[in-house]
Length: 188
Ligand SMILES: CC(C)(COP(=O)(O)OP(=O)(O)OC[C@H]1O[C@@H](n2cnc3c(N)ncnc32)[C@H](O)[C@@H]1OP(=O)(O)O)[C@@H](O)C(=O)NCCC(=O)NCCS
Image (tube, rainbow, N blue to C red):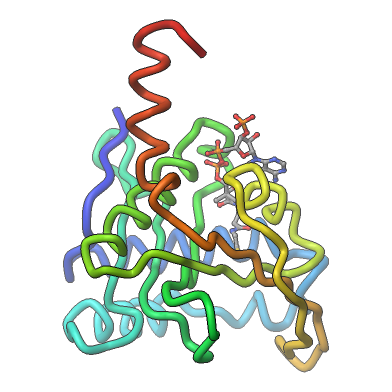
């Protein structure tokens, strides 16, 4: 049974666990092993707790996905961080444990992120993804367009990142309901 809701302070440790487990599952071979081995659940828990506690923190907004009351994924979002001329919202992170991939949970999380941003009059959104991460196909599938690329450094290694954008997230926000209604009516 899937339940998506806003994270509360008590979720910090579980978010940190999913965050680090998913980083290791996703980035092995892309990001140096030393960097992945040195990730600390305790440090991450403290960071997430600080963000969740402070509504003014740029990483404050987190949605968690629970299956049978256990957090298996999350999405973190807010205002775009680099003063982009066209895109005002940003999906900072979306991580789901591998065992829960390809069940439509990522799509539902992104729909809910879009719904939340719209309530704050934010109508566009971008996301940065490592160029070599197959997750970029997920964003394409959800209608995002490739915007640009940039170099970043992780663990002492230069990596290429790609930005994907949704110029209008209203459709994305409605997508969930549209798909659920259509499925219920056996149209898809
Ligand atoms: C990327 C991620 C969030 C997608 O979530 P998910 O729950 O597995 O995706 P969904 O089941 O909602 O998939 C939605 C659609 O995208 C497609 N898709 C998802 N991941 C894909 C991939 N890696 N390659 C190609 N298509 C993909 C699905 O096939 C589905 O297509 P459909 O419309 O034909 O059904 C999840 O795989 C994940 O957490 N990956 C590891 C962490 C990561 O890379 N995060 C992004 C960092 S920027």
